[in-house]
Image 1 (cartoon, rainbow, N blue to C red):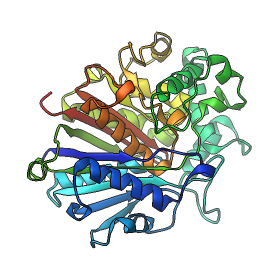
Image 2 (tube, rainbow, N blue to C red):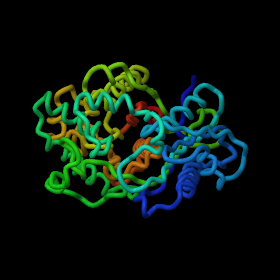
Image 3 (cartoon, one colour):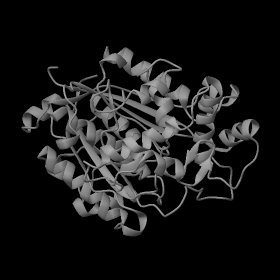
Length: 395
């Protein structure tokens, strides 16, 4: 095993489905941006992991044809909403194990308007066990988008246990827009108020429409390499992946009768623990996090799952503004999925790009002071959770 340098990152501005170009254009743009950032030619890349959810087989190859035909191995990755960070996990693993000196992780998505739906309706859904467990708790409700039932139900379970005011979740949407105002890559940058959020149509449980991330098109990429490769190619090796964990569903997902566990809480706890253990960095050391805020309730629950605040204290954490600039840890300086958008395959790599910019001190008006380590959390039901710790070299 060896240290892995993040040699370059890149992304294209995210867009609403009706305002986006084709996935091939998006992906090529992000990959070119990462290569330019690293100062590399495409031919220097030894392996590629291309992540997307809504696309035909080998779309990764098609997305890269514009860069050239080098014969480089391309592996297509689909791990639901954690697809981008799963591609990064594989690229990092290929470099760390010595298989290649340099690898590219690419994530992209060309989405359609509206809630997520299954593409294949003639076979068992990968989320059938999750849905069955959810129905055992909440009863049948086919009128509400499935993801909202999972994450809205998880938020309601927290409210029921701790007596939390459901309005606290809405503060997260307001914070997300405030952060996104400084992010030129984000879809929604206009400010919103607490009344705007609470007054938007109810979707499920405590969730209103402005507490749900929008379907989005976009792409992002990261190039990782060995320190030796970085030195020989004049690459800035100032940001490295210190630890990373990918965890899939645990028994409690289906057996605990808890909507929070169905929505991935245990996966996050396990992955975070493994990363803290491997890195020697604890949650008390973290000053900036990009985490999976597909719904406000999930961001809220993730504060506790990552250990950023003790169990049962997330409400105070939010109301005391400990989750933003001037507080203990800045969560989603990019605006997160709620405001930046959530093109499924690209999300994990967009999170990576934001944290690399933060560690380089190049995040502009979004810059968090005193950043030497950064934490990333990317969750996909069905299930996979990837947690990644980045560090500034020499910190």
